[in-house]
Length: 417
Image 1: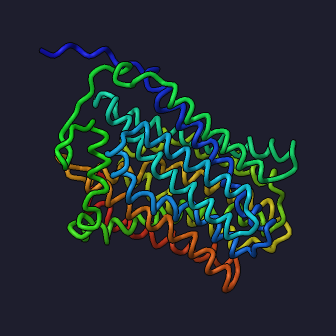
Image 2: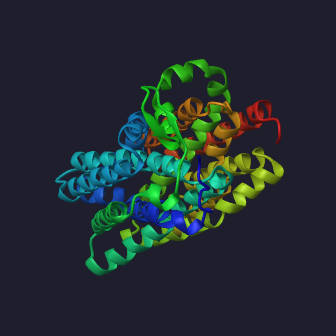
Image 3: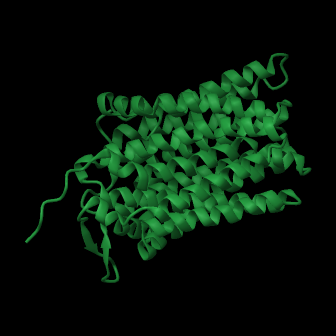
């Protein structure tokens, strides 16, 4: 005989899911603006600094493959605690780095841990939030992540002002990871806080929570799923990969640009923090646009805005008002990114098999991750051969190509536009 579950309260997910997410993302937001600056201080060229900054997205891509298996084996909360611990190890390596190579390895570990943490918190909410509240819970989770990326750079700017070194950002992330782990360790058993949760049988016959099965299926047979869905993944999926590419390009090229025009670490952090506020402010509006007018009305303006922002940078590096142009382009990129909040997750959910969505979602996420990891590497390579301005221009053209792909294939695969 089953007993009635207690009514769901939003406060019940604040501590176990949203607070650790806010802490972790605030720490990550603190380090991203200063990675090129720290690499530059270690003697790296602008191209090598870009390669070091790219290590975080490469780590995230690498972490996407085993993270689902790991979450299914040890559970969501232990996976989040382990991810925080791995990030601490990476941050210690960053703090002790004698050269850019060691710094890049530490940043790679931070990216790897971020992928595990992201999937674990997604699986956690899938397990414990009733399905009627799930979409709102996941969109709130995305908003909390963006809030962290807004707060982190301001903490870095304050830390640099107090201590005079951009490396203080690594200490900020280290403290945030430790705090997130403490929150997770000291929480009561979630099953007692949330009541009964739905369990299903995993691939090996073990009883798993619904979120753990989702995570397991996303990483099981990933490449087979990509092969089975190659038609949509090579068409609309190419657009998704370019969305990922433009987003990660923005995250890398903005702090690199600041280094190239001679801005200090604290000034860069403040500018990126303000841009984070613009981005964060639009996460709910993006969902409203997609639900009311269709997915294309969010995806297309976002891609065009990201492309134009890169092109503005490409043609203004050597102008007298380069700093003003940099600020304007950074805000345009933030506005465009905010307009596309949640678009990849939404498109993936629209396209996935409703009876068994996890395998396709894993393939879709991996496809977007390929673009996200490839763009910073391309920026570093082009910068090494020619200049950062040309790298920005190339990414701007790629963004316009991506907009064309979305315009052609999004209506075909998701008719409501």
